[in-house]
Image (cartoon, rainbow, N blue to C red; front, side):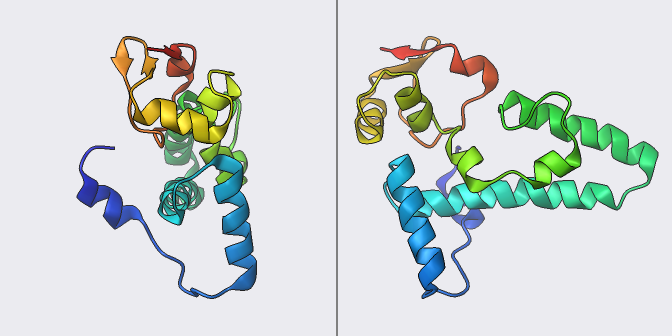
Length: 155
């Protein structure tokens, strides 16, 4: 993720701060994915928003230009394991926040059974007990690619 200023600029807080249904949905997602704060949820929402905006912009392009850019976008999202290889722009537009949150390192460590809970997975990552290949990773919010998923292990 790199520069913290860049991350902060991507996070977009909700326009309506006291929407009861949105707050309930956010609280459910924070609990389901073991997030530390809603800022992590807003960051994932920003990532999803950017993907969907790109897909919508490709729908307006001429067919020959659209097909090449569409394939490139699908290939990038396939590497992140968010869509299948034979996906279309409609599949990209139907992505949900849960699909992005499930690709975080914290969720995958728990899903692989390396941790007893999502909170335990986060603790293992922050304390440097998880590695991807030979690299120790300390960012629980890192989006894991398809190739990296098989290389996750205890350090």
